[in-house]
Length: 137
Image 1 (tube, rainbow, N blue to C red):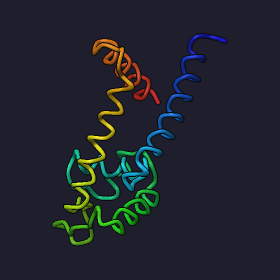
Image 2 (image 1 turned 135 degrees about the vertical axis):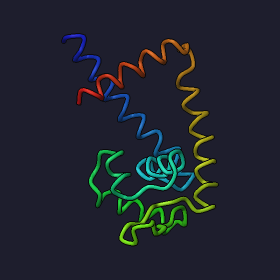
Image 3 (image 1 turned 30 degrees about the vertical axis):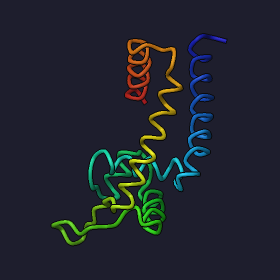
């Protein structure tokens, strides 16, 4: 098998296992990976509309709407009217902010442990490779 095929098979296997392990870790923090990805986007970038979040996540708006509804039911997010009354911006609640801080710290430590043994230059190389391939998709 060619090296590039082996590379992408290994990447796919790693990505699936990584998401599975994240979901296992996030369960104790009362969120799934799909929910965390939305929370993290808002946590890092401030309030956004469902359309903006869907575009960033590269998923359909109904998918994000369902995730946001569940996060709203948990009390982690709320919809805030923007200047245009037809558009709501999803924002974190204080409870959501606390949850994000806890999850971010928990996952940061986990991700750091996974990166142990790789120096910053090696990590940057892999990140740049992944970003370059992503840009081609």
